[in-house]
Amino acid sequence: MTDTQHDVGTEWLAGAGLRPTRQRVTLAALLIGDGQHRHVTAESLFEAAKDQGEAVSLATVYNTLRAFCDAGLMQEVTVDGSKSYFDTNTHDHPHFFWEDDAKLTDAPSDQLVIAQLPDAPEGAEIASVDVVIRLRRKG
Image (tube, rainbow, N blue to C red; front, side, top):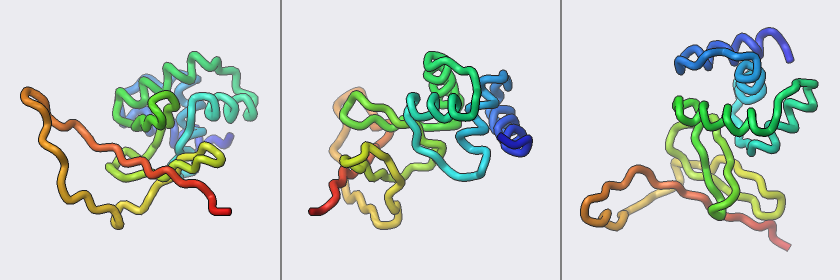
């Protein structure tokens, strides 16, 4: 990992008011160090850190991803109620879930039209709407 990637990760954390611990900077650099958005699972980020020779436990990865979400740096996207993906793109946008290889990618938000949502029950308000479009390869 380059010094530039570490610097980008450190700045990302500082912008959210998070203390730049070694583990946080390492994971932040893996997530946004090249300027690209990522959809990761805790397990895939753990493997990426391990592949870089970084000593980070899976529990630390989970805790760090939770801290990043709580700070507004990432959003959690749940698929099937059990599998969580973490997205560095925090703007509202739909996702494609590729069933064949369990990957999550961004879907073009300019093509999505939601004409109407149901009224929220009495005493509740809609906090957000998550759109996950499940895909399967033809053939």
